[in-house]
Each structure stands twice: as C-alpha cells, then as structure tokens.
Image (cartoon, rainbow, N blue to C red; front, side, top):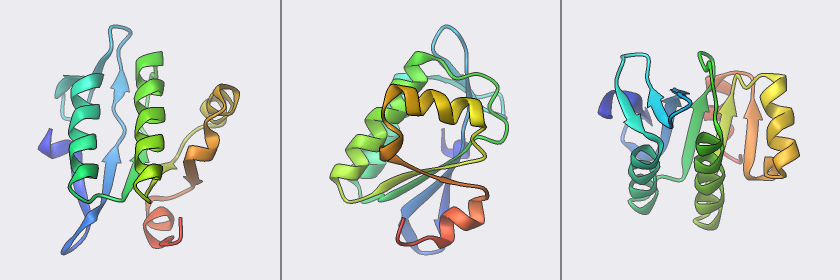
Length: 126
C-alpha cells in the first residue's frame, strides 16, 4: 500500500495525495500498479494516518473506472472522521456523474472539489 500513498509536502506528514483506485463489484480496490486490497484495509490505513496527524487527503479520480457502495461508504467515513479532527478530504478530477451521486447521498459538504492536484494542494484554507 505504500506505493499508493504519497506525501505531498517535503517534511510535512499532514497531507496525502492518493491516486484513487477503482473498486471491483466484490469490494476490492485495484490500484494502477495492480496492487489489490480490500476497501476496509485501505480505510484502516488512512484512519491510522489521520490518527498520526494527517489533516488533508487528496483523492485524484483521474483514472477511476468504478465506484461501488463500499467505496462511497469509505469516503464518507474518512470525510466525517477527518472533519472532526480539523482536516479535509479533497477530490480532484471527479466527473459530474459522481458529483451528482455524492450530492444525492447528501455528503458533498464533507468534501471539497478541485480541477487539479496542484490547486488542491495550494488551497491551505480548504
């Protein structure tokens, strides 16, 4: 999982940029490097990082092919948990169809949307 989690700012462990993996209908996340893990293990790793001080998680959905309900639940849990800790989950390259889905679920206020990773990183108020 180390290959899928990238430190953003040198010397800063409070921000992570993640290439959002695609989910399979069975609840496994598939990363671009062909690493596969369960949604719950990925969530546990990110919760651990939050507990260690991460306050910003940026998901880049550029190559996302599929998002199932387990994935959506994980994002909602992370967004809520990080918000309680004073942080924020940021989404980059999220297509309009998935934005509408997140709006329908009623959790869009947990996330902030950006067009580019650089824009998300530079928005320190976000």
